Length: 390
Image (cartoon, rainbow, N blue to C red; front, side):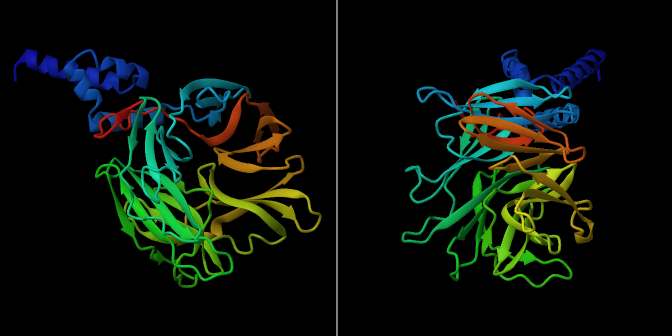
């Protein structure tokens, strides 16, 4: 190998290394530098490396809050990102116009959003599903799934989850379908999985591998409508099989459904109004908001699974809540994020269960909280086919 060629290869490697640390907005412009740079920036390998670098360099001391900003009826909605700084202030870091086709945002992963709309005429009796990356202003309309809404009086419910398959550097969407008919015998829930690399849906039978010591699980009858939580390489939801309640997990790698046991007697002493799953200090967490049976006061139980999958590791924290008339929790990195309405104003409540400190911020024009998470901009969808520009 000639010395000049060796120098050129070293320079190419150095440029590649530098580019992996460059912000997304600049990389989009840099594609115009040369065909070589454009090919590099849009390559599958580069997009993954850039995402890994962005995650590793993100400031874990700050929490990021995503919310819809609702303007006047003639103005488009916007997706805003604010950071909760260490000095307990809020700073806006990005603002994107939400495309008209984004009706319900049902998932978020690695800077990419999942939207599902079941009221559209595009697909007969089915959902229209989109993936959207606001950082690169690109979206993808997914092909129709195999499940079609049956005609008739049946009330079918759907829940979605977006997950990153790290082993294959791929993305998957899990769609769970079940019939909601309280007090009646209902058919088993069904599942479909979409894979981004193949741009296709596959139908699944929900066969649950039950935990040691639990009863065998037949079919899944219903699921929690709060959405699917992506954690530890799996999507999670609270599920029921007849009168038996458990956490249903779907491993993104081997595509198997498994059971995670809930804490024993976790509803003792509380009349639940809402329950769901979240991540608290790197652990799977069950939260239950309701009324204490003893004095009718509002409270929130946090059940933290210190060791993933080990039922004996569930640990309870109790938070007394008196001032919130309506409270929905988002738990990330040790902070409980909530939202409540006070007359016509929208407020953000930040509450730390470790030291019981609380703060209330007003977020102007906020329609609803989308998520509280470690936000990272990415190039996901930049290398794909059938991708549209906003």
